[in-house]
Image (cartoon, rainbow, N blue to C red; front, side, top):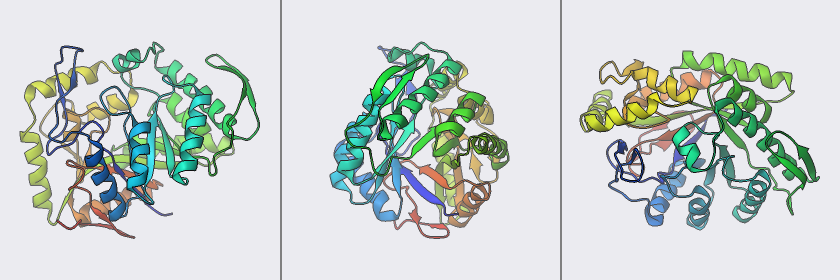
Amino acid sequence: MALHPHWYLPTSGDGRDVVGWVHSRIATAAPRPTDRAPTIDYLADVARAAERLGYESVLTPVGTWCEDPWITTAALLRETRRLRFIVALRPDAVSPTLAAQMAATYQRISGGRLMLNVVTGSDDEEQRRYGDWLDHDARYARTDEWLTVLRGAWSGRPLDHDGAHYRVAGATVAQAPDPAPPVYLGGASEPALLAAAAHADVHLSWGEPPAALAPRIARVREAAHRLGRHVGFGVRLHVITRDTAAEAWAEADRLLRAMDPQAVALAQDRAARTSSNGQRRMTALHGGRTDGLEIAPNLWAGFGLLRRHAGTALVGSHLEVADRLAEYHDLGIEHVLLSGQPHLEEAPLVRRGRPAAAPR
């Protein structure tokens, strides 16, 4: 079973510090200004570097605080040759038939370089900006229906569907995508795991210790097996890797010292109000404390003090980081979705077998 490496496209901006949150006059909180704006020229540099260093794709975020992932990645198609794009999209923000059409078009014009990251939602405040007032479990029920219609529209046969959230007649696209874009779906709750078992090609988890992920992987496998499906698995992690472990941990310490305590407090207040099971698990790894952040060998929870969603990083020498990735691989995780700040300089060179240091 191969290990597939993916990098990250920082469409909210980039810099040498962890991107956190500040008070804003237009909302309770907003991402703080970054050192590097997400211009198309800078994002093209990151995408070309990822392609050159051996990554299969780049993951994009979605939300009101980043650039639109469809438009941004489409603009980068001509800047790259083989790099694929994991484009995030929200079932609450676009109809499944329209999403099927957009994905089919993207797949044709890109030569098959699209993958989809379906984001059900984790922040109630963000959901309501899009007009979505459903609760957590109802959102996953809607995602289940949304993916049923999406895949039906790709099937080549018009789909009729009459459900709790969608009623469509003859959902289809002009030309079915070939191949159909793989669907990535995250979530740590029971509804999320069941939706992944029913629809995902890859189930994504944020970077908890391997022992904490093993039961969720087993649960998705079991549920998928009952449906006659195979689901792959991926893990989302930051990475701080250097020639020596001491150098890597010195960089983690630098990131921690640069964090504004007020920004940390604001981020933790937001995290405490989440309806996301996965976000609660990320927060529990550090509990808002700045000590004891190495929660497993080489796994550091410091990013989660300021950053929503993925909050852990693998920290260590190149060999140590490779060994930790091997441990995730031993669980059955085939996809590692990595990032590091700044994303241009921090991307490690990927080789078959173990990751190695990028030339500096």
